[in-house]
Image 1 (cartoon, rainbow, N blue to C red):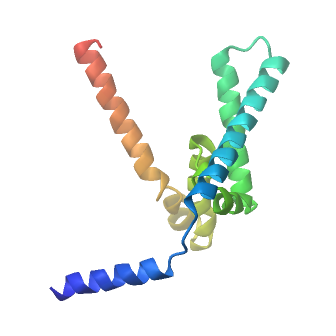
Image 2 (spheres, rainbow, N blue to C red):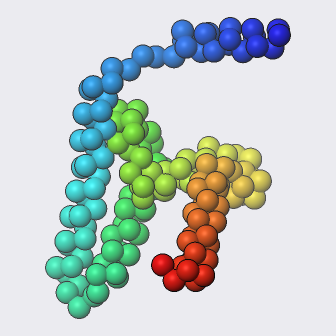
Length: 150
């Protein structure tokens, strides 16, 4: 019984100390920043398709994804992605750049603990479950496709 009261008190304390955000302006900035990140990706795709007209769409997409991953990691390393995230909220969690940030951020933070037990282990603390769920889901979909031919 005391455990439940302690949890309630703790939750009330956290709620009192958590900053309140205004939902409408936050949604607007998230939309604008997320859209801008997507537009930047489209600009790179268009540039690559103009410079390399002989490449297929799949190769152009791969180049664009690699560029966006590089930029997300670079901005994380420079400390800019955290500022974008604080300003834009969920708008900064666009799948590719947000995923790059989720891997690079813990790697930078835990680098002082060493290469193996710090950087290599900690960089998958956030991204690890995403990777595992993606692999398991793709295996499940593949098996359904194999068995039922859907």
